[in-house]
Length: 154
Image (cartoon, rainbow, N blue to C red; front, side, top):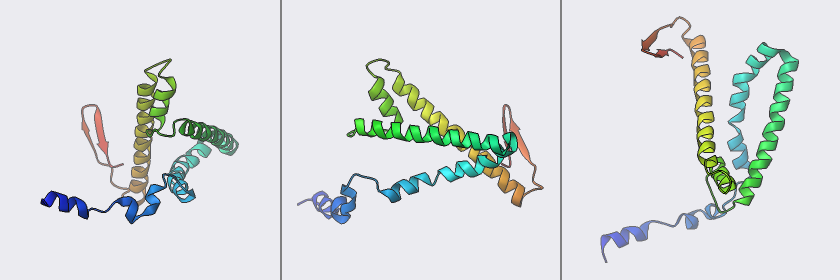
């Protein structure tokens, strides 16, 4: 017997080590853990929203946003049930749902999803950098410019 066969025999099957891996489902704790990203967006934008449009305006914006998010979650769950054997999220659902009518829906949805996450991460990074500078380095105002790109502390 070669050493390749003995090495492969020593690697345990993940479903035998942890039978929970074979369930293929998310529980309440998994959903709770995934939803913990939401408070980050609320903390970053709630104060600015109240300052920009007032408390009543911010309340209307946040209630409207909550309703739209609820409807989107139901739509996403419906698509996940329609395409049970597929994994890939929004881009895959758009591709599968629209491929008979408009084949570019999948690539457009993929680009839109990536762009939304990329811009959000940029805004959150800038905000956190500004908060860190304001709290711990208020006198540091350096910046470096290389053509159209400018780097500063935040």
